[in-house]
Amino acid sequence: MFGISLQFEPNIVHVSLVEPVQAVVIDQAAIEREEMHKADLQRQREEEVKRQAEKKKAERLEVKRQADLKKRQEVERKRKQEEKKKKETEAKRKAEAKQQEEKKKKETEAKRKAEAKQQEEIKRQAEEKKKRDAEAKRQAEEKKKRDAEAKRQAEEKKKRDAEAKRQVEEKKKRDAEAKRQAEEKKKRDAEEAELQLFNFCQSAFIAVVGEIHSKVKNNWTYVGDETGLVVAILVKVTRDGEVASANVTDSSSDAIFDRSAVNALRKASPLPFPDDPRCYEQNKEFGFNFNPDG
Image (cartoon, rainbow, N blue to C red):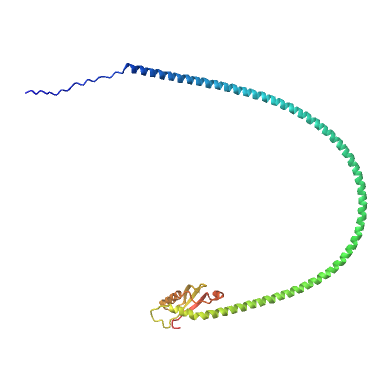
């Protein structure tokens, strides 16, 4: 069997759109305007080039004119300068001639006055010499008298100086002896004061030895038989009694006991110490014998 389709599909016709005549005319006008615009620009550029060329030409002419003017001014200036130089040279020559004439007159007058003055000076010097000779003679006589008096006074002064020297030597000996005795006394006083301070500090330290021993013993711990054990320790303390170092100098032969004694010393720090600061240097290092039974 043959089937018949009733569906209708129209044919689609593709039509090319043609630009209207009016659009073509408008585009041509735009092109013409663009060409006219380019022509105007070209003309303006040419006019600007021409204007710039004329401007440069005018500038060159102005530069040339200015140079010519400057050249003429320079020629005029040199002419005036030469004229001024000639006038100055002539004026200088006349002034020098006048100056030489005046100088010559002055030198002639000065020579005349100098000769007159020289004659007067010779006469004056002769008078002065006469007076000086007379004065020299008088002064010589006076000097002779003064020398004799000076000699007499020098002899007397020599005697006085010798006596004064003797007295100075005597006083020097007395002063030296007094100084020696004073120094000996000062030395004795210092030694006595030092001995007194030593004894005082020794007593002050002895007074706190028991306290030191008690404080160390109170801080001492030891497990073992300490009977008969004694250890010698060199102790160094600060000014506040703080233990700076503690070193065994004579062992008890029991290392544990020795260490316990050193530890007790350190735990007891600061140790009782004399209050007087003068006693520090003497007692800052001392030997401590620790004997628990003592």
